Length: 366
Image (cartoon, rainbow, N blue to C red; front, side, top):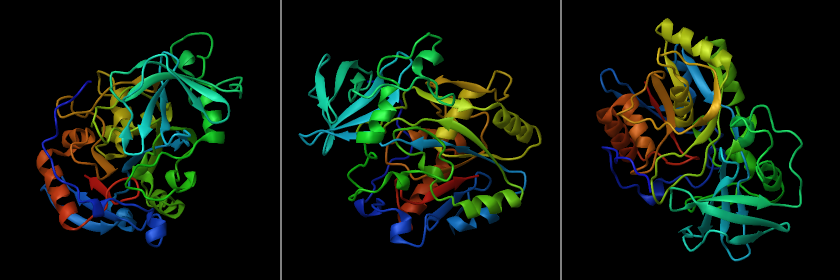
């Protein structure tokens, strides 16, 4: 298994700080979450409501958001296990995880065929570098779409081959009929797929939600734009997380459109802030930057991992959720804001009892 160095910050997360329900259920609305702000200049940490974001941003700031929408990527098996469909691969199959109720199911072998609902089967082709993930191919009675989406090309199109890989086109249609949102143990109820989308969700493809943007409402977006904040999109389809192994991210498909690249480059030239809404945005932008420091339009797979060693060349700020102890994303946060500020933010979050995970509170690093 590929590993990366542990982040400087390590801590214990009390179970009662894991957000179990969406904020619109436990409070007044999606934006009813707290916002912890850490500033690189001076190291100040302050506490806000998310609705105060407008007061913390400046005209000319650029927010880059992920427009990937979440798939119902979990399929339940009759024996209590579940298959989590993660992402297609450049080779034409899908990465999947077979999970027991309390974690990954390691007792699988290459060539094994799993019976899925709807008279479908899933063939395990080979193990991925991770011990929990498999390359697999779905065989379903429902035929693949005749042409892939232009915003999310098939693995074959992205690698220059002439035909769609077997099973790739079948999977989203199959999941729409038989899947449900991925849910981990800290969320103790089923919530509809809409609970895992954001106001920016437009291109289905993520196994797990790019949840940093979840607190945004259409009203807040309108007010931000009216105040002079510029909002531009990228797309990066998120794979399944690794709560047990804390692995570095594997290859994911992303797109940085030409208008987004132009806006980001212009902002950088003028000395304005470029703030990523989510770690997925950081990965996409930092994967698209050229040797000259300019962001280039791109649509491809990336295996780039942002760490303090690789550094960041595009983003100057990040809005993100609170990450688990030992999560690889903490290394990205250290690359952007430095270990001392990240430590101060997380100590404050624990002391003030912020909530973690996709339905929890958020952290703005400036």
